[in-house]
Image (cartoon, rainbow, N blue to C red; front, top):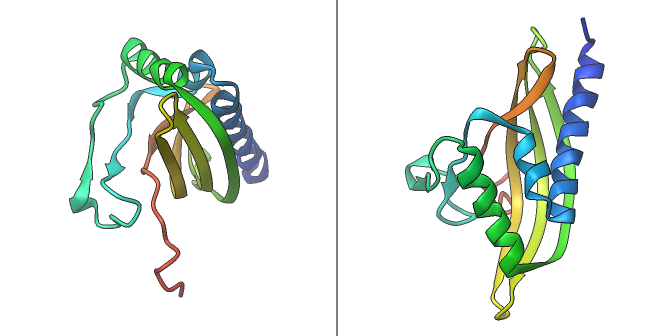
Length: 150
């Protein structure tokens, strides 16, 4: 059985694998980390901290639909930069669930020059399936800069 430290490293490696997929615009690599039951809610804005204002546009993970959608983004946009910093990895006591808090600053620019900026904090949730970790849920990007910390 893996130690908590080993699991935390596995989650860190998975976050880094996802980052590589964005950096190389590799839709196949990106969808390879998703659990078959993945869902991905998005806040309407980076300041929509209340989930009452969130939406879910794609529904449950579907390999072809999600791969094609990410590939469309890659085909129609240039990645200006993709900065990611893991702030925390939390592992369940059973070592079969985990999440990573990641600060991201990802800037896309369409071929027409329109920017799509993902800047803020996300919570990436992972589940252990057999001997493999899968990405099962993520909050959309939220900006916590104006919220007092305890």
